[in-house]
Image (cartoon, rainbow, N blue to C red; front, side, top):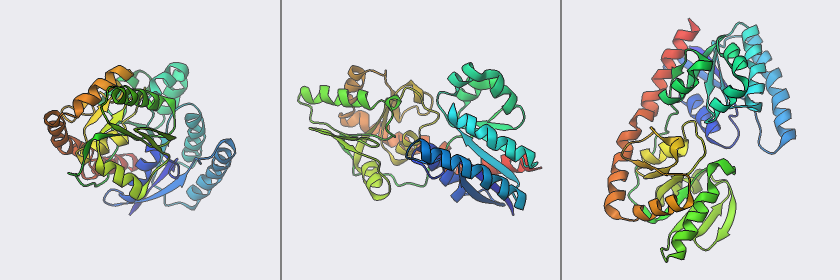
Length: 321
Protein backbone atom coordinates (compact mmCIF):
# COMPACT_ATOMS: atom_id res chain seq x y z
CA UNK A 1 0.00 0.00 0.00
CA UNK A 2 1.23 3.46 -0.88
CA UNK A 3 0.77 6.45 1.43
CA UNK A 4 -0.47 9.98 0.84
CA UNK A 5 0.26 12.55 3.55
CA UNK A 6 -2.30 15.37 3.81
CA UNK A 7 -0.81 18.60 5.16
CA UNK A 8 -3.09 21.52 5.99
CA UNK A 9 -5.48 22.94 8.61
CA UNK A 10 -6.88 19.51 9.42
CA UNK A 11 -7.70 20.30 13.06
CA UNK A 12 -9.19 23.76 12.60
CA UNK A 13 -12.75 24.88 12.07
CA UNK A 14 -14.03 25.46 8.58
CA UNK A 15 -14.53 23.84 5.22
CA UNK A 16 -10.88 23.13 4.40
CA UNK A 17 -10.39 21.17 7.60
CA UNK A 18 -13.58 19.21 6.95
CA UNK A 19 -12.39 18.32 3.45
CA UNK A 20 -8.97 17.14 4.68
CA UNK A 21 -10.60 14.96 7.33
CA UNK A 22 -12.95 13.42 4.76
CA UNK A 23 -10.13 12.67 2.32
CA UNK A 24 -7.90 11.20 5.03
CA UNK A 25 -10.72 9.02 6.35
CA UNK A 26 -11.59 7.75 2.87
CA UNK A 27 -8.32 7.08 0.97
CA UNK A 28 -8.51 5.70 -2.57
CA UNK A 29 -8.15 2.00 -3.22
CA UNK A 30 -4.54 0.93 -2.79
CA UNK A 31 -3.64 3.93 -0.64
CA UNK A 32 -3.20 4.70 3.04
CA UNK A 33 -3.69 8.28 4.24
CA UNK A 34 -2.12 10.28 7.03
CA UNK A 35 -2.79 13.84 8.24
CA UNK A 36 -0.46 16.51 9.56
CA UNK A 37 -1.93 19.75 10.90
CA UNK A 38 -0.36 23.03 9.77
CA UNK A 39 -2.64 25.49 11.54
CA UNK A 40 -4.40 26.12 14.85
CA UNK A 41 -7.38 28.16 15.97
CA UNK A 42 -7.00 30.78 18.67
CA UNK A 43 -4.90 33.63 17.34
CA UNK A 44 -1.35 34.46 16.30
CA UNK A 45 0.56 32.52 18.95
CA UNK A 46 -1.16 29.14 18.34
CA UNK A 47 -0.78 29.66 14.57
CA UNK A 48 2.96 30.29 14.90
CA UNK A 49 3.43 27.31 17.19
CA UNK A 50 1.58 25.07 14.72
CA UNK A 51 3.74 26.44 11.90
CA UNK A 52 7.02 25.82 13.72
CA UNK A 53 5.87 22.32 14.67
CA UNK A 54 4.67 21.21 11.24
CA UNK A 55 7.96 22.15 9.59
CA UNK A 56 9.88 19.89 11.96
CA UNK A 57 7.27 17.13 11.87
CA UNK A 58 7.09 17.08 8.08
CA UNK A 59 10.86 16.89 7.64
CA UNK A 60 11.07 14.10 10.22
CA UNK A 61 8.18 12.15 8.70
CA UNK A 62 9.65 12.32 5.20
CA UNK A 63 13.06 11.29 6.48
CA UNK A 64 11.49 8.10 7.89
CA UNK A 65 10.26 7.28 4.37
CA UNK A 66 7.24 5.42 3.02
CA UNK A 67 5.42 8.60 1.93
CA UNK A 68 4.64 8.45 -1.78
CA UNK A 69 2.76 11.76 -2.21
CA UNK A 70 2.53 14.88 -0.06
CA UNK A 71 -0.89 16.48 -0.58
CA UNK A 72 -0.73 20.10 0.59
CA UNK A 73 -3.92 22.13 1.09
CA UNK A 74 -3.65 25.92 0.76
CA UNK A 75 -5.72 29.10 0.74
CA UNK A 76 -4.19 32.54 0.08
CA UNK A 77 -1.83 35.10 1.59
CA UNK A 78 -0.35 33.77 4.87
CA UNK A 79 -1.67 30.28 4.19
CA UNK A 80 0.10 30.36 0.83
CA UNK A 81 3.30 31.72 2.36
CA UNK A 82 3.40 28.98 4.97
CA UNK A 83 2.67 26.26 2.41
CA UNK A 84 5.54 27.40 0.17
CA UNK A 85 7.92 26.38 2.95
CA UNK A 86 6.25 22.97 3.27
CA UNK A 87 6.39 22.46 -0.50
CA UNK A 88 10.14 23.13 -0.41
CA UNK A 89 10.67 20.64 2.43
CA UNK A 90 8.77 17.98 0.48
CA UNK A 91 10.59 18.64 -2.77
CA UNK A 92 13.97 18.60 -1.02
CA UNK A 93 13.03 15.12 0.21
CA UNK A 94 12.26 14.12 -3.42
CA UNK A 95 8.62 13.34 -2.64
CA UNK A 96 6.01 14.34 -5.27
CA UNK A 97 3.71 17.19 -4.23
CA UNK A 98 0.06 17.85 -5.05
CA UNK A 99 -1.21 21.33 -4.15
CA UNK A 100 -4.95 21.78 -3.60
CA UNK A 101 -6.19 25.36 -3.82
CA UNK A 102 -9.28 25.89 -1.68
CA UNK A 103 -9.65 29.66 -1.55
CA UNK A 104 -12.46 31.48 -3.33
CA UNK A 105 -10.33 34.59 -3.84
CA UNK A 106 -7.19 32.96 -5.18
CA UNK A 107 -7.57 35.00 -8.35
CA UNK A 108 -7.01 38.15 -6.30
CA UNK A 109 -3.96 36.53 -4.76
CA UNK A 110 -2.63 35.74 -8.24
CA UNK A 111 -3.06 39.33 -9.34
CA UNK A 112 -0.86 40.35 -6.41
CA UNK A 113 1.72 37.53 -6.61
CA UNK A 114 1.25 36.02 -10.06
CA UNK A 115 4.92 35.32 -10.98
CA UNK A 116 5.51 33.62 -7.63
CA UNK A 117 2.37 31.51 -8.00
CA UNK A 118 3.40 30.45 -11.52
CA UNK A 119 6.92 29.54 -10.39
CA UNK A 120 5.70 27.41 -7.48
CA UNK A 121 2.83 25.71 -9.33
CA UNK A 122 4.96 24.86 -12.35
CA UNK A 123 7.09 22.65 -10.10
CA UNK A 124 4.23 20.42 -8.86
CA UNK A 125 0.70 19.26 -9.70
CA UNK A 126 -2.04 21.76 -8.86
CA UNK A 127 -5.70 20.90 -8.24
CA UNK A 128 -8.62 23.34 -8.27
CA UNK A 129 -12.22 22.79 -7.22
CA UNK A 130 -14.25 23.61 -10.33
CA UNK A 131 -13.93 24.06 -14.08
CA UNK A 132 -14.65 27.75 -13.53
CA UNK A 133 -11.60 28.09 -11.26
CA UNK A 134 -9.49 26.15 -13.73
CA UNK A 135 -10.37 28.65 -16.43
CA UNK A 136 -9.95 31.74 -14.24
CA UNK A 137 -6.60 30.65 -12.76
CA UNK A 138 -5.04 29.12 -15.88
CA UNK A 139 -2.96 32.25 -16.75
CA UNK A 140 -1.04 31.79 -13.49
CA UNK A 141 -1.28 28.04 -12.83
CA UNK A 142 -0.82 26.67 -16.30
CA UNK A 143 -2.11 23.10 -16.38
CA UNK A 144 -4.19 21.93 -13.43
CA UNK A 145 -6.68 19.20 -12.52
CA UNK A 146 -10.27 19.72 -11.39
CA UNK A 147 -11.46 17.65 -8.43
CA UNK A 148 -14.38 18.98 -6.36
CA UNK A 149 -14.82 18.81 -2.63
CA UNK A 150 -16.50 15.58 -1.52
CA UNK A 151 -19.83 15.42 0.28
CA UNK A 152 -19.97 13.02 3.22
CA UNK A 153 -22.61 10.31 3.23
CA UNK A 154 -25.75 12.09 4.49
CA UNK A 155 -29.46 11.35 4.75
CA UNK A 156 -32.19 13.25 2.92
CA UNK A 157 -34.48 14.83 5.51
CA UNK A 158 -38.27 15.18 5.23
CA UNK A 159 -38.64 17.07 8.52
CA UNK A 160 -37.88 20.56 7.25
CA UNK A 161 -39.59 23.77 8.36
CA UNK A 162 -39.65 26.26 5.48
CA UNK A 163 -39.85 29.17 7.95
CA UNK A 164 -36.40 28.24 9.32
CA UNK A 165 -33.33 29.50 7.43
CA UNK A 166 -29.71 28.51 8.06
CA UNK A 167 -26.35 30.15 7.37
CA UNK A 168 -23.34 27.92 8.06
CA UNK A 169 -19.86 29.40 8.25
CA UNK A 170 -17.08 30.79 10.35
CA UNK A 171 -17.19 34.31 11.77
CA UNK A 172 -16.03 36.39 8.83
CA UNK A 173 -17.68 39.39 7.13
CA UNK A 174 -17.15 37.82 3.70
CA UNK A 175 -19.61 35.06 4.66
CA UNK A 176 -22.45 37.59 4.54
CA UNK A 177 -23.96 37.15 7.99
CA UNK A 178 -24.94 40.84 8.05
CA UNK A 179 -26.87 40.43 4.76
CA UNK A 180 -28.81 37.46 6.12
CA UNK A 181 -29.56 39.23 9.41
CA UNK A 182 -30.86 42.36 7.68
CA UNK A 183 -32.95 40.29 5.25
CA UNK A 184 -34.53 38.45 8.18
CA UNK A 185 -35.32 41.71 9.96
CA UNK A 186 -37.04 43.00 6.81
CA UNK A 187 -39.26 39.94 6.61
CA UNK A 188 -40.17 40.02 10.28
CA UNK A 189 -40.97 43.74 10.02
CA UNK A 190 -43.54 42.73 7.36
CA UNK A 191 -45.03 40.17 9.73
CA UNK A 192 -43.38 37.14 8.09
CA UNK A 193 -42.31 35.12 11.11
CA UNK A 194 -39.18 33.49 9.77
CA UNK A 195 -36.26 32.41 11.95
CA UNK A 196 -32.61 32.68 10.95
CA UNK A 197 -30.06 30.29 12.46
CA UNK A 198 -26.40 31.34 12.20
CA UNK A 199 -23.34 29.28 13.03
CA UNK A 200 -19.90 30.65 13.77
CA UNK A 201 -21.16 33.75 15.59
CA UNK A 202 -22.94 34.54 18.84
CA UNK A 203 -26.11 36.56 18.28
CA UNK A 204 -29.59 36.65 19.74
CA UNK A 205 -32.63 38.74 18.92
CA UNK A 206 -36.21 37.99 18.02
CA UNK A 207 -36.15 35.57 15.08
CA UNK A 208 -32.34 35.45 14.84
CA UNK A 209 -30.23 32.88 16.71
CA UNK A 210 -26.43 32.82 16.58
CA UNK A 211 -25.39 29.36 17.76
CA UNK A 212 -21.63 29.95 17.76
CA UNK A 213 -19.49 27.16 16.36
CA UNK A 214 -21.48 23.94 16.03
CA UNK A 215 -20.51 20.38 15.27
CA UNK A 216 -21.77 16.88 15.81
CA UNK A 217 -25.38 16.49 16.94
CA UNK A 218 -26.10 20.23 17.01
CA UNK A 219 -24.96 20.69 13.42
CA UNK A 220 -26.87 17.59 12.37
CA UNK A 221 -30.08 18.89 13.92
CA UNK A 222 -29.83 22.25 12.12
CA UNK A 223 -29.02 20.61 8.78
CA UNK A 224 -31.89 18.18 9.25
CA UNK A 225 -34.66 20.59 10.23
CA UNK A 226 -34.02 24.02 8.65
CA UNK A 227 -35.83 24.68 5.40
CA UNK A 228 -33.33 26.61 3.27
CA UNK A 229 -29.61 27.32 3.36
CA UNK A 230 -28.38 30.88 2.84
CA UNK A 231 -24.90 31.52 1.40
CA UNK A 232 -24.48 35.26 0.66
CA UNK A 233 -20.68 34.96 0.53
CA UNK A 234 -18.46 37.45 -1.28
CA UNK A 235 -16.37 34.52 -2.50
CA UNK A 236 -16.17 30.75 -2.15
CA UNK A 237 -13.97 28.03 -3.55
CA UNK A 238 -16.64 25.35 -3.40
CA UNK A 239 -18.79 25.75 -0.30
CA UNK A 240 -19.10 22.55 1.74
CA UNK A 241 -22.33 23.79 3.32
CA UNK A 242 -23.87 24.39 -0.12
CA UNK A 243 -23.06 20.97 -1.58
CA UNK A 244 -23.95 19.16 1.66
CA UNK A 245 -27.30 20.97 1.79
CA UNK A 246 -28.03 19.91 -1.79
CA UNK A 247 -27.26 16.30 -0.89
CA UNK A 248 -29.60 16.51 2.09
CA UNK A 249 -32.49 17.93 0.08
CA UNK A 250 -32.23 21.46 1.51
CA UNK A 251 -32.67 24.20 -1.13
CA UNK A 252 -29.97 26.86 -1.38
CA UNK A 253 -30.06 30.64 -1.85
CA UNK A 254 -26.51 31.69 -2.68
CA UNK A 255 -24.50 34.54 -4.12
CA UNK A 256 -22.72 34.38 -7.47
CA UNK A 257 -19.77 32.86 -5.60
CA UNK A 258 -21.62 29.53 -5.91
CA UNK A 259 -22.73 30.03 -9.51
CA UNK A 260 -22.45 26.79 -11.47
CA UNK A 261 -22.53 24.57 -8.38
CA UNK A 262 -26.26 23.85 -8.80
CA UNK A 263 -28.95 24.22 -11.42
CA UNK A 264 -32.39 23.29 -10.08
CA UNK A 265 -31.65 22.84 -6.38
CA UNK A 266 -30.62 26.42 -5.67
CA UNK A 267 -30.97 30.02 -6.76
CA UNK A 268 -28.28 32.66 -7.29
CA UNK A 269 -29.18 35.89 -5.49
CA UNK A 270 -27.56 39.32 -5.59
CA UNK A 271 -25.58 40.14 -2.43
CA UNK A 272 -28.15 42.57 -1.11
CA UNK A 273 -30.48 42.34 1.89
CA UNK A 274 -33.56 43.29 -0.17
CA UNK A 275 -32.77 40.64 -2.79
CA UNK A 276 -32.25 37.96 -0.16
CA UNK A 277 -35.41 38.92 1.74
CA UNK A 278 -37.45 38.55 -1.46
CA UNK A 279 -35.83 35.22 -2.28
CA UNK A 280 -36.41 33.97 1.27
CA UNK A 281 -40.07 34.95 1.13
CA UNK A 282 -40.45 33.09 -2.17
CA UNK A 283 -39.00 29.96 -0.58
CA UNK A 284 -41.88 29.81 1.87
CA UNK A 285 -44.08 28.80 -1.07
CA UNK A 286 -44.43 25.02 -1.00
CA UNK A 287 -44.33 24.30 -4.74
CA UNK A 288 -41.10 26.15 -5.55
CA UNK A 289 -39.38 24.91 -2.41
CA UNK A 290 -40.44 21.30 -3.05
CA UNK A 291 -39.05 21.25 -6.60
CA UNK A 292 -35.70 22.60 -5.43
CA UNK A 293 -35.52 20.19 -2.50
CA UNK A 294 -36.24 17.19 -4.72
CA UNK A 295 -33.52 18.22 -7.20
CA UNK A 296 -30.74 18.50 -4.63
CA UNK A 297 -29.67 14.89 -4.02
CA UNK A 298 -29.35 14.09 -7.73
CA UNK A 299 -27.42 17.29 -8.46
CA UNK A 300 -25.09 16.58 -5.54
CA UNK A 301 -24.14 13.14 -6.88
CA UNK A 302 -21.11 14.59 -8.68
CA UNK A 303 -19.74 15.62 -5.26
CA UNK A 304 -20.33 12.27 -3.53
CA UNK A 305 -17.43 10.42 -1.93
CA UNK A 306 -18.14 7.54 -4.28
CA UNK A 307 -17.41 9.74 -7.30
CA UNK A 308 -14.70 12.04 -5.91
CA UNK A 309 -12.37 9.60 -4.15
CA UNK A 310 -11.52 7.59 -7.30
CA UNK A 311 -10.52 10.86 -8.98
CA UNK A 312 -7.92 11.33 -6.25
CA UNK A 313 -6.81 7.74 -6.66
CA UNK A 314 -6.10 8.24 -10.36
CA UNK A 315 -4.15 11.43 -9.67
CA UNK A 316 -2.12 9.93 -6.82
CA UNK A 317 -1.23 6.96 -9.03
CA UNK A 318 -0.15 9.29 -11.83
CA UNK A 319 1.93 11.59 -9.64
CA UNK A 320 3.58 8.74 -7.71
CA UNK A 321 4.81 7.01 -10.89
